[in-house]
Length: 336
Image 1 (cartoon, rainbow, N blue to C red):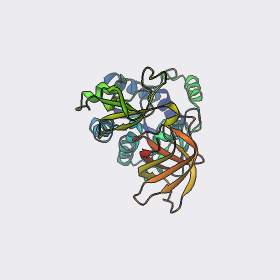
Image 2 (cartoon, rainbow, N blue to C red; image 1 turned 90 degrees about the vertical axis):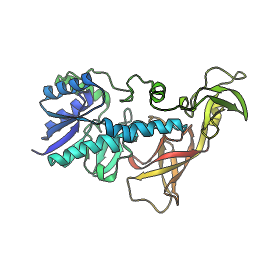
Image 3 (cartoon, rainbow, N blue to C red; image 1 turned 30 degrees about the vertical axis):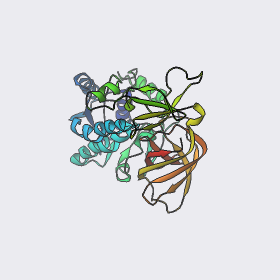
Image 4 (tube, rainbow, N blue to C red; image 1 turned 45 degrees about the horizontal axis):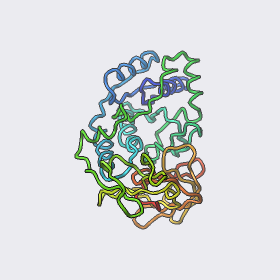
């Protein structure tokens, strides 16, 4: 029986993954990455025992700090909007899974992500819960060893499987928070770990109209409380060099052009522009068709057929060819 290493938390997704993989004849070796404290760890251990799978617990605090937490803080202090899961998957989660697989002599690793991995390609999962965006920074080498058992399922179907199998995790709530900030308060979390930017001006139509308490508290597209001359205002740009938050009207948030750098190609890098579609945040509905042009500096220019709403520097721009993820880069500039 071939071994496979499964990222296991004891939640409904990883528990159903374990059951599905065992049903296919795999020897499932669970790996729990410990960042959430003793009770979460005990819950994972109870879940592994109930499924009769082995479980190794590994402390990933140092790796998480280096590859996710520190860049997360640095980006917010520069007025950018990072996505920690996009950073974590290739550098922490899948690296740990693959390291353990190498130790065991296992060829493949698995997780409960709602996406598909086929012959080294990354593809969308079901539209209602697709998570391919979060996996877009995995390398081609990593993807060749990845199995994603839930890629063809919707979440409701996975819960139904868990109910049918009598798994205790069937009705366990989804975990939505950032794993290293369980109370969601990232502003407090950053302030405890770094010197935060000072207060500064909020600018509208070239003039100061108010004050902000630090650029790390804002992101492009965020609505500003209250009204200004009877109008709603939104963050259009954050300028760390002048410590300003530049505001705009709703209609000014939209743009047809984005530039991204640090591109992760999941196909051979094209020499010519290619057609596809692009997603600039983890949403289900916004993925307009576009033309992607490789740039001499290694980045990409993306021009969309329909406007994008408030693409923010620091977010990932993920390019698709149909269902397949072909590239992912970090936004550095937009037309907003």
